[in-house]
Image (cartoon, rainbow, N blue to C red; front, side):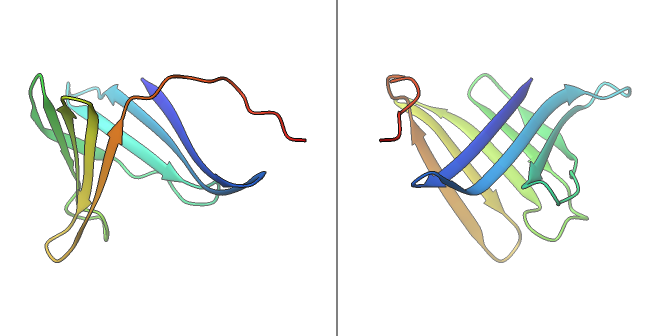
Amino acid sequence: MMGLARNTRGARVVFSEFMRIQTAKDGAIVFTPRIGTNAKPVDFKAIKVSAAEVVFENLEHDFPKRILYRKTDDGLFARVEDHKRGEDFPMRAVPCSGARRQP
């Protein structure tokens, strides 16, 4: 599975992330995010998988060391963390309105 996230300010992209989830040769589920176009991709192995939650971990990475995704009643909750800090990303489903046209 592949995904792409982009944050924009006006017509300018201020943040982008390419993501891939795949099964490794050893059978492990691996999440590989890549921030921007210059950063190297980093692998995070799944350490917990259930119908409502998946937790990926790479203790060798600086930040984050752990990435969590949890299904919620109205969308998805994500968290990135290490032993000292964390950032939460609550998301909710919205209708797709198609591409916006610039004047």
